[in-house]
Length: 100
Image (tube, rainbow, N blue to C red; front, side, top):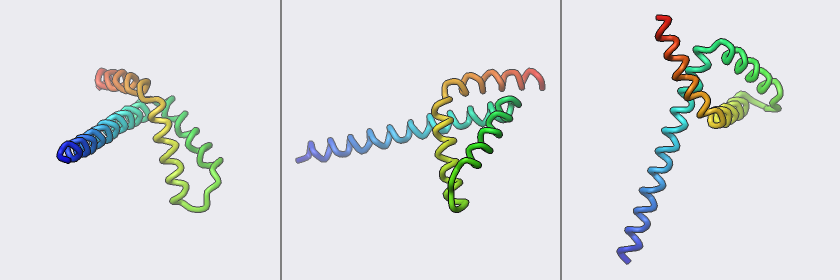
C-alpha cells in the first residue's frame, strides 16, 4: 500500500516538473521572439502585416474570441520558430550593444 502512495507522489512530482520546464521553454521562446520583433525592422513589418491578415480573415463574434484565437496563433508561431528566434535574438542584442 505504501509503495502505491510513493509511486503516485513521484508521478505528481514528475508531471509538475515537466509542466514547469515546458513553461520555462515557452517563456524563453516568447522573449526571444519579442526581442527579434523589437530590434529587427523587417521582422516587425512582416509580423505586423501577418497579424493584420490573420485578424481580417478570422470570423469571430466578439473581442474576447478574437483575442483568444490570436493568442493561440501567436503561441503556435513562437513555438514553431523557437530555435531560429533564439539565435537571432542573441545576434540582434549583440549588434544593438555594439551600436550603443
